Length: 160
Image (cartoon, helix red, strand yellow):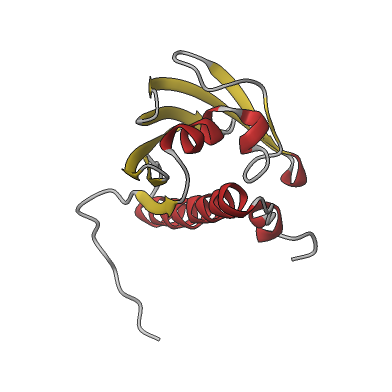
């Protein structure tokens, strides 16, 4: 198989989005309130995402802890954080919430600021895109149907 050298002209970003059938206030609250977020994403969070807050998110099943600094909050419109594990350079994640009807919200997520070689940055962006897509699918199942799918926990099962 031939090997190709690729030249990146723009740093890759992770970007995904999904329609969630729920009012924007409920969908927004699901991301700022760790008691809700832990039902579809991380295991636990140390506090709400409030302007200027610094919190910790844990994924106990993987032994991963991430520090999160809230850079901006626009109620029911936007969340901007900087996050990263202790041994990693932080990246930026932005959620946008667009109400479409009284009970429909489109959630967009962009993660950028990856660092490393071109191959490493590309891999990080692809991994993040897949991860945030699972998060949105888990959110959708939880808010629309009350089902906890364990998508994030089951992504890397023990022994694989």
